[in-house]
Length: 348
Image (cartoon, rainbow, N blue to C red):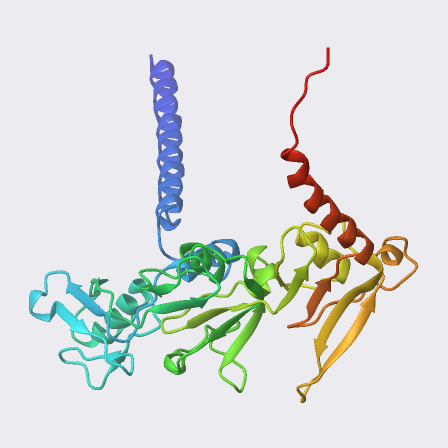
């Protein structure tokens, strides 16, 4: 009997040890799970560069507050501190209890809320602040020049140059090869994020020129962020003119290099009565009222025996009519009406 009792005591003692170890293991797992941030946390860490980059990219796409905007600031359980305030033209706002002004322009709603919460730490433990733009009133962006729908556009979020051109209907057929972005000076209140290039860096003349082709392809160097107050101009292409014995006499936009043969082809080509050996190009000489005459043999150009010269702005390409063909055309025009007046006889 004593032996059986001893076995039972040993059994229960071992079970107690196992249960204790199991409780300790479960406790450690629970503590590890509590110390690990959940997936929806806004906390970022230097040891998590992928998440940090994702948040930075998301912030870049958000609207940045500008001068004249009205922002609403809400404090959780502190209604006396909540309210709406308009951003001054210097890009700042004032808040109760805070000495001096707070930089608001060029920040997202979340960035401004974080800054305000930090300033109120001395008055409240863990203040919860929410900021959103109540009225978008910062300087609009203007798009002018060779676009389908020129106008002024009020930004409610950050957009890039290519998207803005899409809202303006895209470039017209008269558009040249350049986009000029002029800054109004409001960007001086903004500071570029550390380690990033700022779109506020302009030339000494206050504007930046981009390639229209590169912008339309969405290339990064030609597709910058657009800032409030920017003036975007799509320059019109220089023109040359094709006149004379062609199917469609018309101006030819010089978006890129255009030669004499190409310009004539764009005008529909030459008529049958053309004297192709003496195409005349009239070019105005710089600084004078005189014109230079350049003769082009179109037949020789097609056979690659003569140079197909490139046209310059305001060149006039005159396609002459062959004298012999002109005489034959005159005879045909004279005979045709007379023949139509002759009697009509049916032969059986």
